[in-house]
Length: 495
Image 1: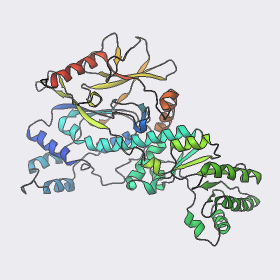
Image 2: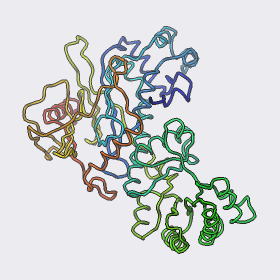
Image 3: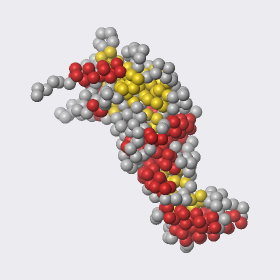
Image 4: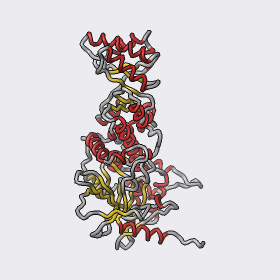
């Protein structure tokens, strides 16, 4: 059984994990009598992170836990009741606070499973239900899904670069607070790292924990040999010595000296760790020293601001590194610290309940113009189950017999769909009328899914530099409707 990732660490109520404007809009909807009007929102991102070709969906388990426990406590309501307007009056009347006190989440939620590879404009989550509720959860869903999707994607790229080597996440000390550290450790494991140094993440998420020692350990003893000897005495079967406190290659020789003593007592040195200097050169020299001394199985661990491009470069230089310790660059997504996911209104039930008004947010850039409808993502596959193209379509309208996928930015790029093409629908029911109807997979199962899904992509999509664009488009009638809605909503400006 999966432990609740949020409610066990924080106060039971996280309803105030939101922006003020969500609460002010909620009050406005309530005041106008619109709180129960049925609405549909989609959460998605506009471009894959790190200039890459894909992302790995993550964070859904956190989102589910948040929605299951969405309640306004007495403390929450007391805080909201104390907020004042610009003229000193209460911002929210007591009647509205009483409404929030009785509020229960009753929306339908559909989502793409964690570990699934996803692409620009595809809804990761669809929320359908009372307008006030669906609006109120926007900020929390974005912060929970955006960050973990970003880190899981970064981890998958590092896994791609490292190949079959061991990858360790060492980032807690550089993370944005302990929650950032916990979320990053979870998402990094989902995305492909093998273990974490974060002990709390290990406890909560059943992630393997690994670590070595710091330079301070060596500095606390009279000399390096004494430090290594003492550490080996404490951990005779789990020692990895950090060898670069004073002189790296001399540190390797000292590690070999203690490794011989370990072997004489029936134990083996696990590894050495390089944390500075020319890692390609030092790892080759260290490997030669270890092999010459008969310690071919001692691992060489490297750290020091590593990321996927540097790992790739080190491998090309012939670095003899078995294990990669990744910290700051992974847990902070150093080269792109935000995913930029958005949450947009896409449909409102007509006041007379006769159907839907589909809504659109316009922009000067077509790529930033939203997609109207109650969207589903259909992934077409080849006979081996590998993705070929994704189609977004409006579930509120019947699909035509002959399907064509249209690029949402360039309508001249069209892709007909074979009638017998195999596919799967990516958005799965998670909540129905506020009740959880989906058994979430374990973190290990989501990690396995991510591994399979990333490897199923063509290498041209996975490459780091100028990746091939995976085909994602709108079903033709949806594209036509969107175009007409843009023309209807955009004002004509005289020349």
